[in-house]
Image (tube, rainbow, N blue to C red; front, side, top):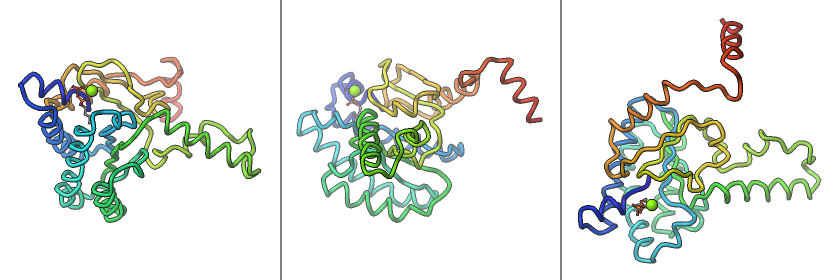
Amino acid sequence: MDGNGRWALKRGLSRFEGHNKGADSVRTITRACRRLDIRALTLYAFSEQNWNRPVAEVESLMALLRRYLLEERAEIMENDIRLTTIGRTHRLPSSVSEPLADLIRDSAGNQSMDLCLALSYGGQEELGDAMRRLAQQVADGTLAPDAVDEQRIGAELWSSHLPPLDLLIRTSGELRLSNFMLWQAAYAELFFTPTLWPDFCEDDLNEAIESFRLRERRFGRTDENIEALLQAND
Ligand code: IPE
Ligand code: MG
């Protein structure tokens, strides 16, 4: 969800106002995904690297996050949405971690959609943590090195509760992943748009989904390969 700062700058507003407007997009897009019956939506709200921003900006983002959790709570519960997180959430201040823990606990039984907030998240950090845990199990003798395969690694990731990543949307014209779901992005379809996150609306989401729909996902196979597979399944 990139481009809040540039959105504000273009209008002579403060970066905070950009973040504030970005939170409106979060609401709009979450509602739209729920309506479209999207299984899971993960929002890259705050990266592990974002801690390096000026203290005042980090504080205003944390205040916004707290407000979001309190204000969205009712709608999340009413819409049967399960809220989860990925990331080093222990780094969050208690003003955020407390309402966050409450909502995670209270929404745990909801089943219609997963809304996952990536908070203090980094893809390399996620992989690093998983590798360390696996290495420890090997050192303890509870895991054979040969058993460390793609499935085992995937199961060790913070995101192991989420379905495979299908579509990854990057706003604001940047053409990089910026440490987001590196492992999970292996076969995800990527959608890059110049639209700044505060301007990203339901039409933009529909455009991304339409683009996704028109792509052929081969997962390393050939066209004929897939045709044969589909016929075999008929
Ligand atoms: C992304 O917008 C929002 C967060 C990191 C929370 P930016 O703040 O990165 O916006 P730009 O890149 O300065 O436009
Ligand atoms: Mg940015």
